[in-house]
Image (cartoon, rainbow, N blue to C red; front, side):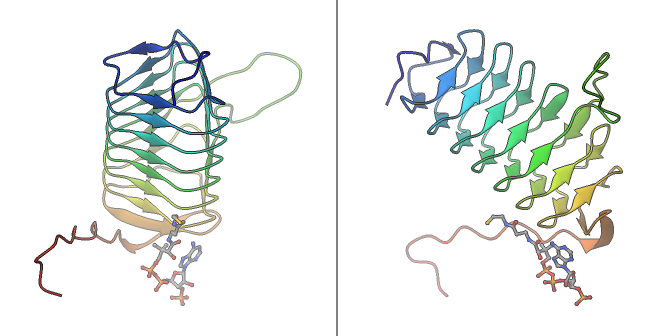
Length: 178
Ligand SMILES: CC(C)(COP(=O)(O)OP(=O)(O)OC[C@H]1O[C@@H](n2cnc3c(N)ncnc32)[C@H](O)[C@@H]1OP(=O)(O)O)[C@@H](O)C(=O)NCCC(=O)NCCS
């Protein structure tokens, strides 16, 4: 599944990039990472090991993504965003990077941090300049405008805390009792 366009720096060859993906050679991709159809990864982006990136995802220049993240289809991650490890980003979630955007004049990038084990629901919007704390969860369709504390569940527009984020589901293995 390796693409002729996909000549990014790799930490090993166990990287799968769909032929339709466009991965810049100035991007770094960690071992065992998979990048699916029509996804774009720009120069200077850094993606860790064991990451799954779905279809039609945009990873902008300078974006950093840790290890073992799951990034679902049609997610946008813009310059100024740093994503930790074991982070889930649901389908069509989008980040932003200029709090007061205009078509003319300069961009001013505000930085956003997603800490380890955070989860972002489908179609959520993360307004830039915030930190999503470790292990937090953002409900589907939420608009996050402020920091989310570690381990907290937020929902709505604007997103407000409604409790603790549910813990990860236990991995079931053959032989486990119900
Ligand atoms: C936020 C979420 C985790 C809450 O799930 P839950 O703990 O089972 O909570 P409940 O469904 O009992 O909802 C609790 C309250 O929050 C509200 N609520 C739940 N999800 C909401 C959301 N996304 N936006 C706004 N309100 C929401 C419910 O209506 C309920 O309100 P009420 O107490 O007034 O009736 C879940 O609804 C959600 O959005 N998950 C993300 C799903 C997703 O995007 N997955 C991506 C992979 S497909």
